[in-house]
Image: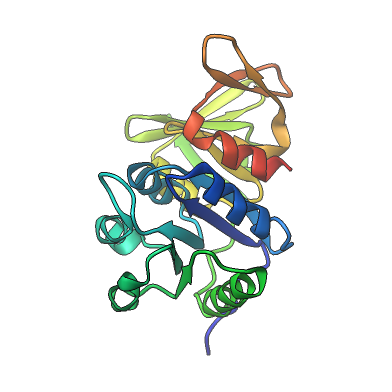
Length: 243
């Protein structure tokens, strides 16, 4: 028997080199309460980096983009391709090739709300058949210098990469855990934790604000007063998760 998709919601990514096209799809997705986060990428290369890091459920992908088109993105992602992929394009000649590549649906611009909803319903049906993610562990076991610490996941403020380890920041204390950032992120609930930089993950419940420092950089401010660098690539997804 196939396990149902967990109730944590659907994480979507919209990839298009045209800002208006991205915002139009994002606006339609925001109407659906099952969509818990929407990230936007303006290029195929940006999409590759984001999908590999965030592991979204649903990908809306433009076909024709400079340097790295939609088919290139799927090929380069390999096993990291999200469970549901919908092509969005103004050209119908790629439809057969798209379905051969495993694309779920093919939205031909311009499309109306009804056609969009049909494609989204198909995506939900496919995601319902995807095996359930492992449940987030309640505790992480950290062994250090003959001591064993049991760290409650919900008490972690933020996590940073440290070579072959991750550093768990819990209040005024920090603990080194021998585990890769990508592996740990995969086990954390996306409703609770969000990557804000290639080397940083935060507990969303600890975030008190986002600040623009005037030098072109963003910072995430935690309730403790800690300031963490926010990569522009993750800013929109963080804002979507917080709202």
